[in-house]
Length: 324
Image (cartoon, helix red, strand yellow):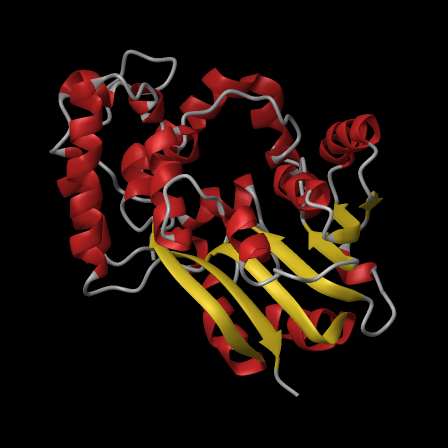
């Protein structure tokens, strides 16, 4: 476990370049929830993370649905929810609700309830929902202080949010399971890797191996002239200061889910190497017509697939039903 690393200093500088002094200053609030909110305070901030790369998203689709052009929403609508109607969904930590909007547009759901602590993000989604007259409800609330009636929902969704919660065992056992209908579904698309991104040496070594496969001009960091030459990982101090909720109990998610739920489907899709190799340099790989960049990506995909033969995936998409 590292208290502070070289990458911590680089990340602080990158955040300053991308989001300014106001964002950096927000991290010194003594209120932990305020620091968490600030991490998601500006939905339009510029970034260069792996999810902006079309080829990466196509890879996720391929691993989840078996088709690079079919995302998990359409996959579930065609399989898990096929033939169902008038379902009620709760999405916890929904942000701007891009995934929830797709479900609401499907006609399968009579209501999609979106809950988050960030009012500004929900406001963006609410405007779109009102324009399209979608069956959506928006709730600014803290899940730890929220109660719903038993069996209120047919589907509960966590999209990149469950790993932000602490006391996950209590959350699952005393809130999520009781809120689900007996034949309901827990759906999640989550980071389930090491807590606080404290990676083992073999993972850090493999990430750095990936960086050696990238030509220098494709390792230019976003909005700088710096090259990304080495990965050292994140220190505990910066993780807690930047967002006290980040990956706080992420490694406990899969064991708990398997204990409390029956697996309907489960699709690991990696991220162990790619998320970290491509962080801050992803902007160099967004053009599908750039043959050199696409060749590099293909090599990185092969490297990660080889790594996954011997290591569990840091990201998992799954659908589960509660055990009785």
